[in-house]
Amino acid sequence: MYDVRGIYDFILCTKDMTKDELKERYRVFALRIIKLVDAMPNTISSMAIARQIIRSGTSPSANYRAACIAKSDKDFLNKLKMVEEEIDETSHWLSLIIDSGMLPKSRVQDLYDESVELRKITTKSILTTKNKMDASERDKS
Image 1 (cartoon, rainbow, N blue to C red):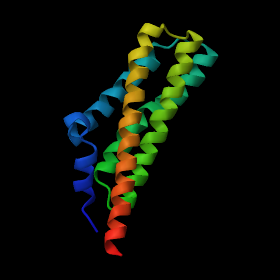
Image 2: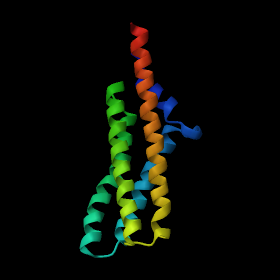
Image 3: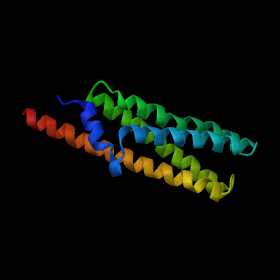
Image 4: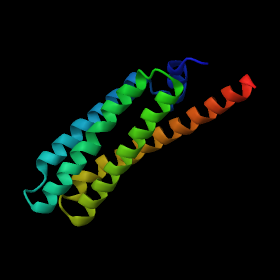
């Protein structure tokens, strides 16, 4: 079996980004979500979406940190899948905020774009990890 953290370092350095830089990127994303939620209007629909997006928009940071210390390749992959699901859900809520006019598009668009970029990075990492795991299994045969 290979060292998961070695694979992690290899696959998550998108555009020469280190794992610590990506951790920080997710942390800053979570902080931006918190500020966005605090700026939302005090309406029933806004508060319903705020409760959803505060969970989905901050959990990728924590789940990504957990992936960084995964105990096995399977654990690493599962944690990355959780990150992918939560960041995708966050993109959904951000698009609803934009499309409903809850907040000005200019206030939300950059955050939406970042959520899409983080999802792409995570999805690529998942695919690369799966390919490396498959290759490792073939090598054992």
